[in-house]
Amino acid sequence: MHNSNPTQTTWESPRDIPLVSPQDAVEAAIEELRPRYQIALGEYHKRLEGAFYALLRGAGSAEDLRDVVYIAHRIAGTAGNFGLDDLGQRAREVDEALGPIADAPKQALRHLGLVARLIAALSSTVNKKAS
Image (tube, helix red, strand yellow):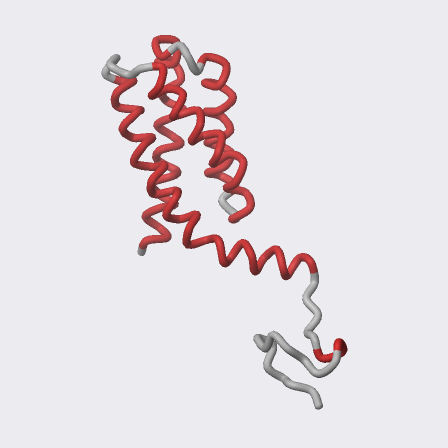
């Protein structure tokens, strides 16, 4: 007897187990992670804005700059998995520009435009998903 419920965890025969392609399994896992990723992006947005304004005022520390680089690196490495290629590209630009000078906040001033563009892309992404 074949049970047609695909969420069932026990089957009478191995032939009754529904087959799922590896691609479908990955896509399902990504969809399951999407809500947590959106929450993380919201947190990253808040942290980036705080560090950005501190750096812009000249009051930013090396810790602020390292946080910007850390967040940019995380987003650059994960955004594409969720179909957020533009966000990932913006983050990669920040990571590549600021990563080598992550301990020199005064040198980072000339790259704050990249950070502003990342914040704008992140804001757009977070606000789009929230509505």
